View (cartoon, rainbow, N blue to C red):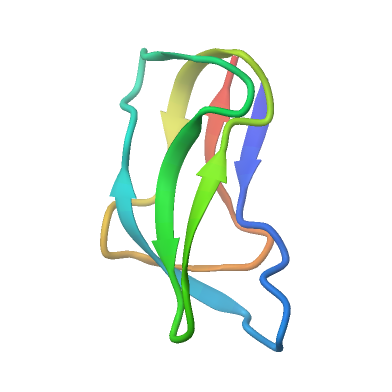
Length: 76
């Protein structure tokens, strides 16, 4: 299994809100596919799949605040 993590957002930003999951548990993704959208006080970002596989776990829901480095989901 591989983790989907919130990357370092720079500029002293330590948290973001999950605005939308574009995939669900059990869905197949390809490396580089956008799987989730997050927003900060300064910007919105797309989080890409680190590899090809199936979404096996989602740890946070839309509207949840997450910290840099949080594991928001898993791919197997």
